[in-house]
Amino acid sequence: MATDRDSVLEAAVGVLSRRPTAHLDEIARAAGISRATLHRIFPGREALIREVGALGLRRFAAALDTADLESGDPQAALRRLVDAVVPDAALCAFLAGENQLFDDPGINELWEIQDARVRALFLRGQQQGVFRVELSAGWLSEAFFDLVAGVGWAVQDGRLAPRDSAYSLAELFLGGALRSPEQS
Amino acid sequence: MATDRDSVLEAAVGVLSRRPTAHLDEIARAAGISRATLHRIFPGREALIREVGALGLRRFAAALDTADLESGDPQAALRRLVDAVVPDAALCAFLAGENQLFDDPGINELWEIQDARVRALFLRGQQQGVFRVELSAGWLSEAFFDLVAGVGWAVQDGRLAPRDSAYSLAELFLGGALRSPEQS
DNA sequence: AAAGAATGAGACATCCATGTCTCATGTGAG
DNA sequence: CTCACATGAGACATGGATGTCTCATTCTTT
Image (cartoon, rainbow over all chains, first blue to last red; front, side, top):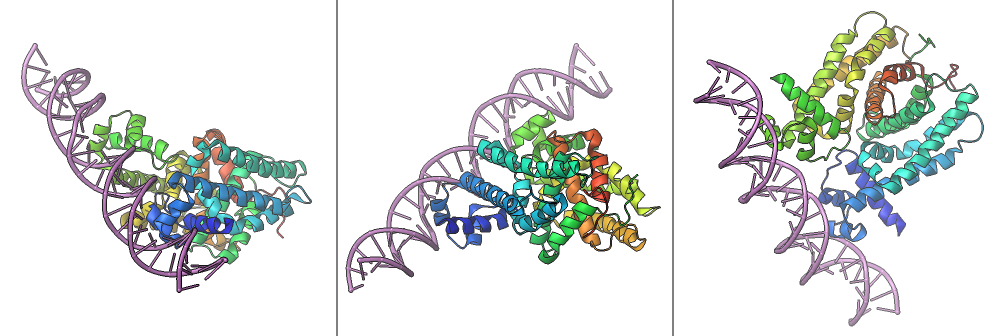
């Protein structure tokens, strides 16, 4: 059952995103299974980490699909993306923290594809005059992901209410911290 | 000499912020010293990590001092903070990724102090009508630090030019991604 | 130049997470 | 009820990073 594997992976994220060096004992306990069973499902720690990363990328890709970034107003598209990705913010936080994953060619390629999709949205928005052109699409994409990861951490640590997370993320990223739009 | 220790710590950051599980061999080589000398300076891995964290917090505190957040226009103060903190963005990136450090009471307390200073700036800015009040000061502080860390990673990986980093950070955080100020 | 300290290189010993195994228990299907 | 199978618990071996040691070399200081 893929559901079984995924539920274990989700439990693993809860531990690993906070402590990347957590022992397998701890992860197994968090998943409610024994270390032996954990080993039966995933051949080893490396495989487990890779699978968690792959799950995170699958979820992120699914969120991009759901948001349908190519259609309609770029701003509305980005708000759809926020809503779609916030539930999996913890996965994204794990991805952001685990740079090591990007040594894997498969993971890296998959990531590049998703990142390109987000960049394309920003590029389209810039061409339509919706997003600012002084900031590169690459930086906008990067910063967006940083904030998604930040939301994931903040929610997990109880510093941000899950209910507020989508609003806080979208408003800050789109509108910034300033009340009145002044640009130096 | 504290300078010696700090130069080793800076080299350590360069390695650890990318691969938190890097071997001491690697860190020593990156610092241009032998593993033996590394052990002579820092009693062990744990101590080294803690010292790196402490250095990051010292630098961040120093940046807060330099920025003089209590004076003048809050927006100008935040721009001063950006300029002051960007050179040490890599340290901040390390801090953000190493949640484990916050188990140490000393580190945690020091962090709380600095975070409170940033929150106070946002609170002051909100009271003066400069910053948006729909976003909590806590979230603004958190998001700001997330972006600083993101800048650190992006610069280190060559995805963002150091020359652009301060501008990109300040503009996105203050003004957001939208060109025309629309709020839904 | 000579003495002292600091460093680098390498050889160990140790510890601990990991990986693998066995066995007892529990569970579900027939 | 019985058998097949999955799981949990624990023991055990292993590997690799860490910590400690020694010794030769280099640099500094006088």
